[in-house]
Length: 339
Image (cartoon, rainbow, N blue to C red; front, side, top):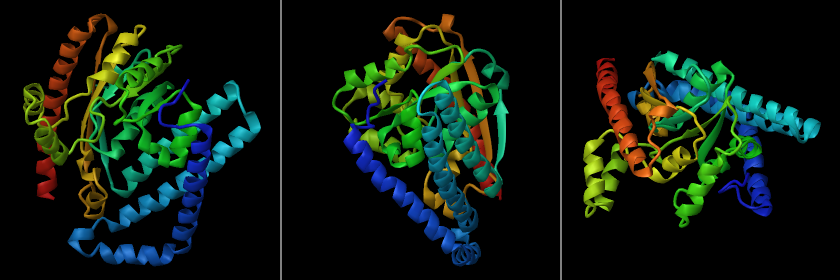
């Protein structure tokens, strides 16, 4: 499979010659300075504006070591297997362990409480997974809450910028994922590439996509209002979903059109709002947050086949997504204000 955004061999080598040594250097530096940085983080927790400094530092330290160990694990798997089923199986294991470690780190350091609603809808063959996107942290949901507990595999539609993370770069390009240029000029090529993820997909394999294309924030919502001030249809969508970004139809419809028969699993969530920016982690907005995750499943037989009807159907699902977020985000905000 071709990977949009991963570049040719030359650009891949140049990128990794920069990112991999950078991770090793940062890991070594933070490890050597650990006592000093730990004391500094402890001092900063005294101040309300930086009360999250200690768990944030702990997460940074853990993340760097996850990256370092992950890179060495990838090198070992490549040297031992090079190709074949064992190579893929081992790479999938690295992906699962890496993701689960980051989720466990965040859960323990920030004292998060996870609640999954409607979990029975995740049972059965693998699906197309459609999520809202409010934080870089919510990227752990598909793997840790859905795929890993059910021994399923997911193919991801990811933004090209994530190639700067060497573990995501190496593992992501060994497996059938797609790193896409969100601002590319060739929209038809991008849709073709997204649709290609459905090619040869097995019963235990699904595809994950974020229809919004980027993380939601009130600022981004307002920016879209200004950018499309003369577009009546976009203004209607923005007013319809004030807590979400309108779904970008190209990639999602391409998946639905190429869908060989998989159900669609939607995922709404709240509680990741406190991790949307690094400043939120530092100021402690995410500490003791309650993360609520809600799944619902739409059977393949209930999904329209016509692209126009699929658009209407997707918008109705986005209404459900928005209503659930609105109801539960209010609870999250009230809880945060009371602490």
